[in-house]
Image 1: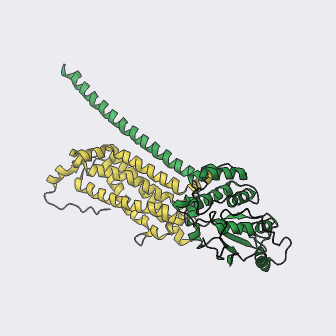
Image 2 (image 1 turned 60 degrees about the vertical axis):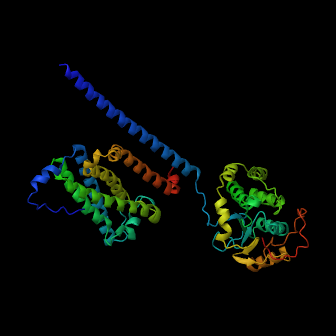
Image 3 (image 1 turned 90 degrees about the horizontal axis):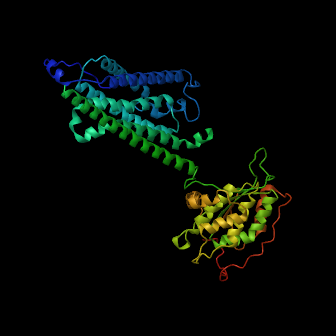
Length: 209
Length: 274
């Protein structure tokens, strides 16, 4: 997401000692899991895309029913928002997340600016994910399971990474309250998205009952 | 030694505090989530397939033996009728043409699509047009008879008891529900009328079909010029052009017209306005 330029500052050791961030094991593990899951989904989507390019009649493994179908989603212009398949962005981004997760799990101290950079990258990813959710629900009218895996990991990832990056703000009362309630926000976000999916495709879901 | 229990105590207090705060957060979040799920679930399940304004939907009345286009199940002649339950000219049309249309339907010559539009809606008429039109769709939904007998009775009843356009008393939803009951259907009709499920549809129906005046009559999409001079025989002749001379194709005598509420003075307007 962000290019982590190696610090060439000669006085680096001193500020690093001050700005190195301690990360709780649970958070570190979360970052690693999110990275692995997101990366897996991105790679699968890319492979499916290549299969589809080789053989246009190929039915992707995730085309389950009229609503859950990545075949119909992958061929839309929204699936290549920047002129190339979105999943390529996912591969690059989630690789950084995996590496960060590994370093954090093994207690390698990373500087504050690194976490801030990762948080900004994740925030951009989150904005993009929301755009994709709206497109998928209200313009394309189908859900792609692997894409939904990416939505699902991105939001908690933002929650964890932002908490790490913004630790210094915890003296602030508002920031503290937001921090304490962060998982509630995530839970509400999941509820909202699931209800939107329920409402949008109710005509289909109701036929399954 | 004395400080030791104190320390533990204060530590436990904080932990208990934290645990309590967390339980509060989990509890509140759960409540909000359950509330949201229940609310959306209720809306989704109760508001099933409310048609949107701007959509066009008709109530098709046809006999099972209707003449179809060769090799299809599409009726060969579809008569489209755009009516407003409050329009006096529509009442006139129903009185003059109703029995002929009924006969043509029953003899399997035509299918009729009723579009109950609302072009006379206003606060002064208590939006009777759209309420009655929407009620007709509710009745048609619940009408399981093969050729929409109940809807036809309801439709005829509403024209028979049409309120004066310039009057001050208009049937309420309760009265519409009662008329539906007398026509032979209850089911979900009261709920459908009271929820206004079809109000949006009916309000947008004239616009969606570009209907400027009622009644507008079309035969297979072609305008049938209806005026005070037009007779059922004209309609039959037009239909004969399409299907040829088939049995059961004839005009029926006009129904004995119930005396029109306020007699229109010499009816100089031959054009189907309002």
